[in-house]
Image (cartoon, rainbow, N blue to C red; front, top):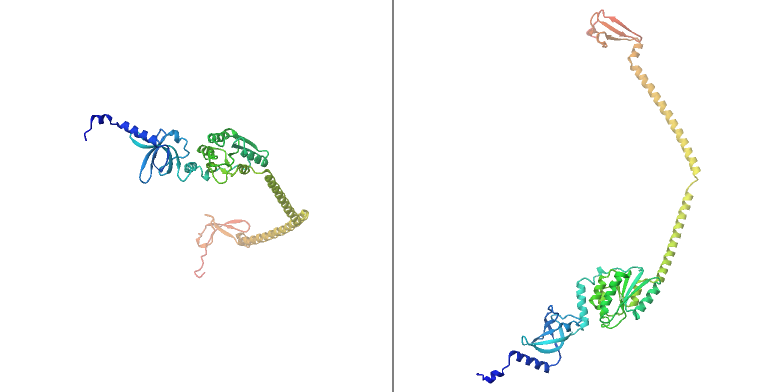
Amino acid sequence: MQLSLETAASALTVSQLTRRVRTTLESRIDGLWVAGEVSNFRVPPSGHFYFSLKDAQCQIAAVMFRSANQLLPFMPEDGMHVLAYGRVSVYEARGSLQLYVDSIEPRGQGSIQLAIEQLKQRLAAEGFFSADRKRPLPFLPEAVGIVTAATGAAIHDMLVTLRARMPALRIIVRPSSVQGKEAAPEIAAAIADLNRHGQVDVILVGRGGGSLEDLWAFNDERVARAIAASRIPVVSAVGHEVDVTVADLVADRRAPTPTGAASLVVPDRRDLLAVLTSLESTLAAGITRQIERQRDRLDGARYRLRDPRQALKALQLRIDELSERLQRAMNAGVRAARQNLEHCVERLEALSPLAVLHRGYSIARRASDNSVVRDATILEARETLHLTFDRGTAAVRVDSIQRPRRDE
């Protein structure tokens, strides 16, 4: 086909065409809700949300600028089915159709509830809900800190309950908003302040009941992290029975109401007095029974214990008896020893050569070596002998030697 000069002069540029399509779309299609599945979700440094919405047949590019997504309570994710409200236009730089999203709602689940579930998953992964990090509450605190609104039923109920249960208790109230945009950072700051300056033993954080939106501050990540970072045990005192907030899960203990929290952290003075009275009675009864048992033991010992003077007399008699037996034994031993000695003396005297000399015998010794002569045949004629008698000695000379006969 050949184009005329007029046709060429009236042709649109790509930019003009794109701009005309954009203008036509924006003028004829107002804001609308689009249902679809999120895919290719990404957040660049600019903070804008870029993603696609798709169904079984088609998909469309979408963008949600930072100014709009800052108010979004949850984070979109790939695979999430949502309702997106916005306007359709053309991105002129690429000439592509695009949905400019102003708000998003998850399908089948409210945005607030979804945001809470996402936060619970993150905190659970960090161990914030672990039972191991839960700290025990002090049995008898000297001071209690309260973080709640300065006016309202919650502070009134907690103060009345605490003072009724323990009149001498020191109470430090750190007021804070509990609802609205500024509530979460104020509650987190109040918890930090009590940790720095409060000198309290336990902290109550809470408010009265309300809707899920009213309780939103207690599902805020800043409050959850402030509770986890507290050096002082924290009791959640949000007045609701059904819904469990994130603050309830992170706190060391959870109470269903502010009144219940006050009752949880401080024992009733009257109950303590009753327990002390019971313990006093039990202790007194135990002491009385112990005294009676010891008295019975003493009476029994006194009955079994004889007069020490009689015991001494018996011991004296026993000593005298043993002394006599010892003396008799010693005398008998001496007599036996003397008799044995006399017998030995008699035997020695019988064996003594002196006794033989007394009976008329003598002992002959050779003068040369003083040896005793038992055999005459060893002597020589004219040899000198020394004779020992019972009384005295004599020197003699051998004149002759008589040898025994062969038959002797």
